[in-house]
Length: 105
Image (cartoon, rainbow, N blue to C red; front, side):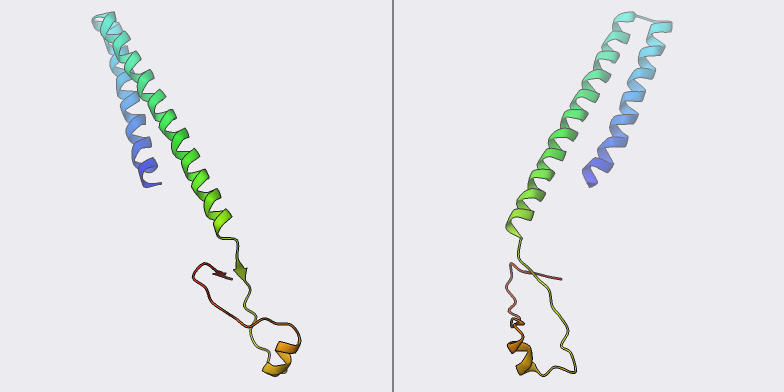
């Protein structure tokens, strides 16, 4: 996320500067330099979009793998003052075991 927040403004400003330079070169000097700057801008935005898509796909895959491997959830219910602990076991309330792979909600 930090890379995305850093690279997005950098790519935007760089693309804007390249296009601005291309417009200036079209009006005042050679067209070949303007075409080069336009090609540079297209390459910059193509690389940026490719990086964004690959990064998004990687993070989605990582999130799906995390969801698949972290399925166990234990709901902790507070002990009621009216029900003794031996009756809770008779009601089918499981004893609480904490594993490192379990998520406590």
